[in-house]
Length: 79
Figure 1 (cartoon, one colour):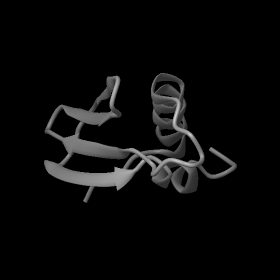
Figure 2 (cartoon, one colour; figure 1 turned 90 degrees about the horizontal axis):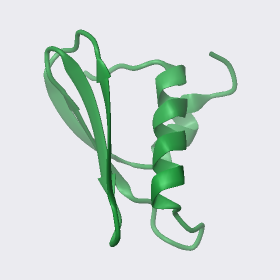
Figure 3 (cartoon, helix red, strand yellow; figure 1 turned 60 degrees about the horizontal axis):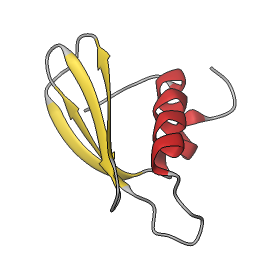
């Protein structure tokens, strides 16, 4: 299981939205989440750019792919 804070979800969402600039009419880009014992890495791409965000910490190894819109739900309204 991969767990991360709402604060991290907000940061990832902000970085990817600024870099990828998804259109409301487009399908939400897919974000790959890979947890290793020392890092949590988020990667996404569109036809023009690839973006990665990495957070140091302790994590159980796992992999998951979710749409970028998933981070809207995770971010919530409070920390």
